[in-house]
Image (tube, rainbow, N blue to C red; front, side, top):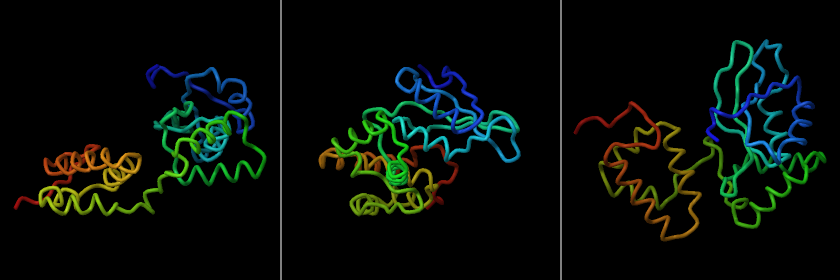
Length: 200
């Protein structure tokens, strides 16, 4: 199902969201969940509350969009078998487990990630991400790629780091790095951006 075709879900508070997820997490393909904006009266559910409840049942948050003046909408869907974990969410799971809030489906998603290595490979948030040495070396060896890398937006830089971090096999990693260098040398980026290197 395309993201735009998911149903909208509006609940009064986090308790109602938790109950909805408990009943529907195994059968629903996902929802656009209404979250409160400052001063809103439609719902009291915040982004962090929604993330917590989603983690408890093995779901994950996705893209967002404005809904109206009082609410925004965030896409929440069941976590896929190849979905990467963030270190932030790993920490949230530890807190939720300590609070006794994790449900069987959430524990199953965690167990699957621990079993296939995704748990240990959890990526850092943008503020803590560092460029891997092998990527930095390959980029620096290509002046055109380095020039583009130097003007990357934070989003594009983080996308390269995160995507490379998701690769498990050494030979695949080498191939990906070569592809990224070629992409940067052509002044292309994972996501659109206006900034380009100054003409030589």
